[in-house]
Image (cartoon, rainbow, N blue to C red; front, top):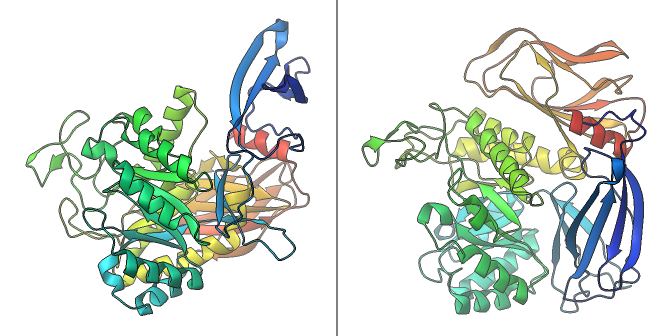
Length: 494
């Protein structure tokens, strides 16, 4: 982070509308800071399906000049009653537009997707199973298609109608057909105007299957030409097998790291070695047996890749493992392991959770139902509406993983022990120095043993020991609200 006391380190930034050359905004921003907010009016941008080209010019110390470009979409309002989903590129969250009100108004609602890939054969012909699925608190319907087109569309229409009544959003899977333009066109045109349409899903591990390197981008361009109102997603299997090429064809990247019950150095399926250049063991480039930190490492790696490639960060979601006793994976995660994998994902930037696969064990159904209601409830406003703060200093627990989010005068802390061994002795988490008058006001998940100690010049969240695979979600309250610029600076420092 830049030294905020250096008065000569600012960048003079001008934002220009390329088609007219008009200046639409101007600001002075500190160097080395992300997410600096600049407001400007959309009044002069008429709704259009074509993007407006926007240029940004910056002049720094010594007259050095910088320039970049982006695109601004200002789409016409829908007139067919269909939903609209957009990505908040400041925080990575999904925003869905509620049905238009009689007076013509509408609103944007943040959504934290929390659900499973669902085996369609489990649903059956009637709605009762879908009612059961929704009763667990999941909010997205992602049906796994069979081979070929993979859907009986008459049956599917009944499921999707029922899903709308139950408040389930559609994540439509075209894994088998996303490379066939005619099939994509038919499916998108059939579903795009549904009120509960959330997003499209194209490649399911296209890197692992070796799909053509342009396949995801080609499909993405076609889908966007047919339906600009919903984002596109896909799931990558490998740590880095043509990451740049495959990720170019999506708005949202899902990560399916499955570390439980697999031998990461020897393939039980193919009887070969597994290393960075050879072999398949069910968890690409993972380290150790049952090492849940592989989940977090993959998300960190992909964020780093995007920064190195110089591209805007795409939203990341996670697909925690909720299966086992098959193929590479000799055991199913426990409830504690499932909670850890989910919270490690969120701690490292995931804005959606879609687990593989349902139906799962009764133990995991119970755990995910309870945890999902907490995440989609009080936690969602923090995770979706605030800058994530990583790297808070932890003493007494070297493997303990902590993230925090701040809105107004409250803070959500997620504290995870990802190890299968307990941590003994005192543990402390140093809170930002600007946090004053802090107290734990609510324990959303965990045993409630954390408390705040110290003076206003140095406060810590403390407790004695943590159990193996312990997850704690806490709400802290402090004396004053925090400005967006302060939150950005603290997040950069962390």
